[in-house]
Image 1 (tube, rainbow, N blue to C red):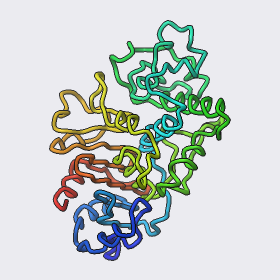
Image 2: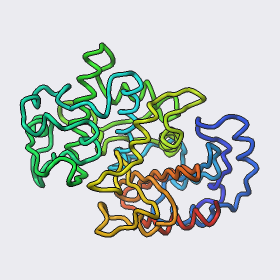
Image 3: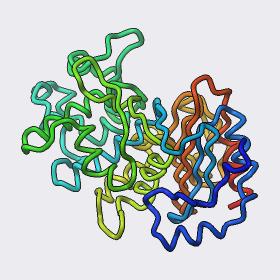
Image 4: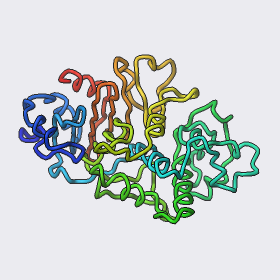
Length: 332
C-alpha cells in the first residue's frame, strides 16, 4: 500500500461541502491504516470511508481515483436508487402490480398479483433456472416456482424485468426511455457518480444485475444518497420511503432488502447465509451491503452515519466482510 494513499480527503467526493472537507483534512493520517492495508493487500483498487458526509480516509493502490471498475453484483444497489428516482417523479409505487406495466401478466392467475415490492425484494417466486437463457423474452414468460412472499431468490430475472418496467414507464411519459441514462442524468451525476459505464444485454437494455462500471468516489456518492434517504444538498432527490424499504428485509429473507444485504444483531443467521459472505458474523452493528465478486463492496451503516466504498482489481484474493468491518470499527 502506498504511504501517500491514505488521504484525509484532499480531493473529497462531491457529496461533501467545502467546510466538511476542511474538517476532513484535520483527520490524522494513521487512522484506518489497518483497514486500508487489509483492503490493499487483497487486490484493492480503491477505498473510501466517510462519516456523516465527511471523508475520513481514501486509499488508491490502483492509482487514479477517477478510475472506474466493474461493480459486478454490487450493481444491484442501484436498483433501489432507480426505483426511488422513478417514485420521486411519480412514475412508480412499490405497491402497484407489475402487471399494470406488463400487460402480458394481467390475466395470469399468479403473476397478476406480483407487486413491484415483491419483485424487487426477491419474493415474487420468479427466477431464471440454472442454465436457462437469460433475456427479457424468457423473463416475461417465467412461471412462478414458489408461492409469492414465501421464498427468497437473488436472481438476475428480477433486474431484467425491472429494467423493462422502468423503460416502459419512462417511454409512456415521454422521458428518456433508457433506464441507465435516466438514472445517470437525473440522480447519479448530481451525487458525483458520473461518468460511469454499463454493460448491456443483447437487446441493449442495461444490466441492472451486474453491469455498472464506476469509481470509488462515485460508489460512495450512491451510498451517501441511500444513507440520507434520498436527500442531496438539502433537496429530496429520490423518494425516501422507497430507499427506506431497501433497508428492510422480508418475511422470506430478513437479511435481504432491495439490492442490498442486511446485517444487524437481531438478524444473526439461523440458517445458511443467502450469499457467500461472513457479513453475518459482524452482528454487533447494523450494516447494509452491496456485494460483487472479488470484494467489490458498498457498506452503509445507517445508525452510525458511515458509508464505505471499496473496489478491487480482477483476480483479487478472498475477502472477509467481518474482518474488514472489525478493522474499520476499531478506528471509528
